[in-house]
Image 1 (cartoon, rainbow, N blue to C red):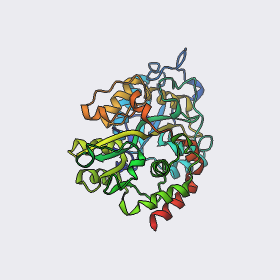
Image 2: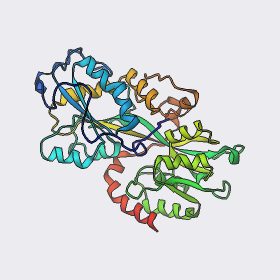
Image 3: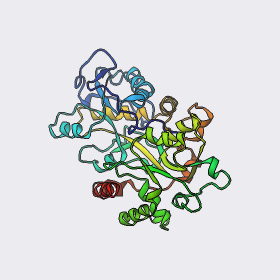
Image 4: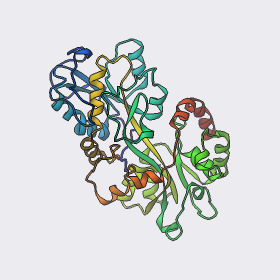
Amino acid sequence: MPGISRKIMGCAAAAGALLLTLTGCAGTGPAAADVDLGPGPAVAGKVKKGALDGVTLTFASYGGIYQDGQESAAVKPFATDSGARMLSDGPTDYTKLKAQVDAKNVTWDVVDTDSIWAERQCGKLLMPLDSAVVDTSKLPKDMVGKCSVPAMTYGMVLMYDKSKFGDNPPKSWADFFDTARFPGKRGIPGVPSDAAPGPLEAALIADGVAPDKLFPLDVDRALKKLTSVRSSLVFWDTGARSQQLLESGEVSMAMVWTGRAYSAVKNGAKFAPQWNQFMPIADSLAVPKGAKNPKAAMALINYYLGADQQAKLTELTSYSPINSDAKPKVDAIAKEYLTSTPERQAQALKLDNAWWAENQEQVIPKWSDWLAR
């Protein structure tokens, strides 16, 4: 489903801020203490009419179709309903965000980030969520962090060539590594600077590790298993390349983002998904530490999480909604690639983002060295 991940979107945001409303300047408006969001508990997708008149907020994301969809589905309607003046900036740049926090001059109010990075920076560069303002009751519990909520979700899925394995399809990541029963090339992500959930978990499962015993990951064992099939591996470094592998028939199987899988099949690729043990992934929304108006920023996040907003985001971008009440209107193929339905969630491999947040920086050099051999 998730169509065009930030890793494959090209991050086409302008370097300067795009003014969504033509008045106001960043940092102006009432102080945080003056913001009145109304009585009662927060409800995702709702904001008190005119509650943020005169407040200016900046939303930062990855640009391209994804950020366009975010703005159309949630950011602009939030401006209309709340009275806030909204600015948009991007692409998300962690170095730039750190510089803002360190200088105590934070100009980004809500930021779309990688979920593992958000976990690692909780309490450092990102502030805890305000549960009185952000309603997470309709979100997947294991995707909600202390400092972040999922912005949308997608997944890493096993795709196989129906013309070769249609009568005997692979049933797990163990089959992905079984080149005797399932001959042919395999596509996997191979970005040296981006060790992330996917190849290591799949390799350990193929080597006999029980799915519920994966963490802490035995990285050396996983790399040894990957080495055993290295001659059959084709590495992709962008989503566009992974999609091309399917459409060209260069591989018999591939580990790819669900959005690119959907796009390839829609373009005629003779591939099908194996959903058993697919790996759920999400972007996150967070508020930088030192944001000038955190309560208003939390109100934007809460609005973004609404069922209607999430449904529209899916319709515009093909990413799966994270609100369980969202009912996006999508075509039959896109519907098959939604990763947030109860059926799909039951098939998902449980990942440990906390482990990745703590260990990713140590895994990257090992991954990079292995790719370079």
